[in-house]
Every structure is written in structure tokens, then in C-alpha cells.
Image 1 (cartoon, rainbow, N blue to C red):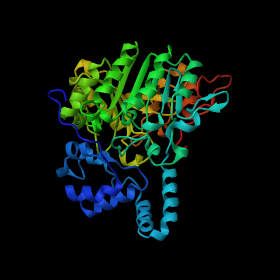
Image 2: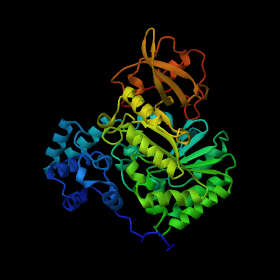
Image 3: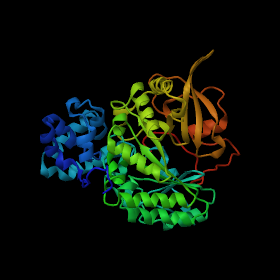
Length: 458
């Protein structure tokens, strides 16, 4: 082992069946145990030793932000749903009824927001390609089947439906053959985002089998890896048995002339406070890869300007690039985690003002909604009222990229479909945001020709 690195620790995941052991170890009261058991019947729960011993402040539980981030909480489901789950799970004879209740509750939690299944899945020769999404012209998302879990699960995760064992809700594909074939017919795609789940749960050899074929596609110039591993299991890059192998694989991608971007999800500055996390970032950067950082604004975890200021400064200090502050998507325990857009603007603006210039690469608050990424650029007073300034920083319809528009200010609005567009908004923007299309217009979406419809419960 290289000098200065800690001793290796074997990864082990803990789930709902381990809650009693975790509770005894850290002194969790019975009420919290019951909540975790009930909520995890519907939403996925998974942690590991690093999260338990290095990230959570057990003296502050249940209010500790890292505990809120990883352990199911009361309020993530409705009281009536929790009561129903408690009643049905108490009697083994109600097992079938419990399964039906769980499925019904999950269906109400909008498992695939923003039209992911209906609008984003591309086709070739009239056949849908599973495990791919092509929402934006330049970028394809790729979901390797072996990477559809994580080292630990975030309670807010907008891809929670990937982890519950329902094949109808899951994006996954066993190998990249369909992706490579699709890319051959779409030279406009320059960027492939390998995502999940978390691709970094795979062994290096498995990951290599998904990445190396991309190096034979000349049109692909950027390979992105979406991962929470640097925060939840930095050992993947430092002490795991194949940590050095994965870094050599990163070097191979960079040496091919591509940009390798590790899209690291840091939700709280504590995730960058450990020596292991900082070592992991340093080792990744030493391969020539660039580390970009993004996370949503989530109540109970990071809805505070000082937290974001500390996080962005910590990212800059380790040489990573602050990239996006997202708005929590309308899925899963959305009502528990959502922050109104007006408050999101205040938090972002207050934190942004504290940053040095090199950290002002971050953009936000951004809604990753059906028509595209909508930036909430501020609030302004007009003669006819108060309005949100909005801008399409990415769009399903390429001609909308960069276009500004406005919506009436609403103190309680937390998502795009809760906003009233300003009078005089151009027809193509109205069509994209609200659904439908002006007469004579031609859609440009590469995955589907249907126009998006912004609504909950898709």
C-alpha cells in the first residue's frame, strides 16, 4: 500500500434489516426504528460503515443533516400512509395487501418525473432502446445494468425508482452495444453521461467494459460519470483493492483525447471534511479527469446559505468545480424536501455573494424539468407586479437554449408547473413549458417528436 494511505476497509452495505443493529450501536430510540422500517417499505434505504462512522453526528440525531440525508424520516410519507403500512406489516397474513399498498403509494410519488420514460427514451428502427435517455441533442444518458445501486442512498433521490426492484420503473442495460449502435447514427452526440444508480459501484473491469467501447466512437468527446461515491465511499479511489486500477482506467480515457468529467454529488460540506474524501478528489484529479460538483437544495439538509458557501469553498479548495445547485425534483418525498423557489433564490444569492471569483462557476437554482434546465435567475419588480426571471440553460428543443422568460412571483411555488407565465411570453416558450406547440412549428427533440407536458404524476 502506498505510504500515507489508510488501511483498506471492506465495503459492506446496511439496509432495513440492519436497523436494530444500527440502533443499538448508536442509541436510536424505538420511534425512529419504527419510522425507518415503515418508510423503507416504500423508499430505498441503504448506508455503509463510512456514512455511519464518519459522516453522521449522532449527538444531533434526528436533526443532523447527514442523518436526514440518509435515513428515512417521519413526514416523508403521509400520516395515513404510515399508519396503513404499520397496520399491514404487523400481520404476516396481510403480506399481499401490504405489497399492493406499497405499490399504490409508490405510484403516487411520481416515480419518473419530467417525462423520463415517455419522452426521453430513444428508438432505433422503431424499437425503443432500454437503458438510454436522449433528452438534449448533444448528450445521451447511459444506464449500465450493473451500476444501478449506490454505496448509500440519499433520501431525496429523484432516481429512487431504480432501487426498488420494479423492472417496469428501471432504466438499465447489460452492455453498451445498443448505445454504440445508436451513437453511430447520431454524430451530433458529443457527450455521454454514464449514470445510475452509481456506475462506481462496479468493479474496474466491469466499468472498463462500458467505458472503453466509447473510445472507438470519434464523435464522443466528453465522457461523464455521475457518482456519489466520492462522498459516500471515497475508499473507491484510495484503498479499495482495485482503486489504482480505476485511476489507470481514468488515465486511459483522458489519454484518448476525451474529457473525463466526474460529476460528484456533494450535498453538505461535511462530505468533504474527511481526509479520505479529499484524498479521493486529489487522486481523481491526478488522472487528468475534472471533478464537477452538483446537488439539489433540500430542506432539513442544506437549506441554508452558509452551508452552501462552505460547500462551494470546500470544493474549490480541493480543485473541484462548483457546477449546479438544483431545485429538488417533484418525486418521492418531495413535500418533505422541497424549498420554495423564492427562498431558493435568496439562499443561492446570499451564498454566491460570499464566493471568490473562481467559485462563481456555480449556477442555480436550476429546475431540471420536462422542457429542460430552467434557471431561476432572480426576482424583479415590474409596474405590473413581482416576477421570477427565468432562463433555459439547456433545452429539449435546442432553439430555446439561452432564452429568457418570466413568471409571476409566488411565495409558495416550488416547481415550474406551479408558476404563471408572464403576459407576452413568446409562443414557443409557452408551448415548451405548458405543452402543445404553435401551429407550423417542428419539434427538434432527438428522442421523441412529442412536445413535453409539465405536470406531476406522469
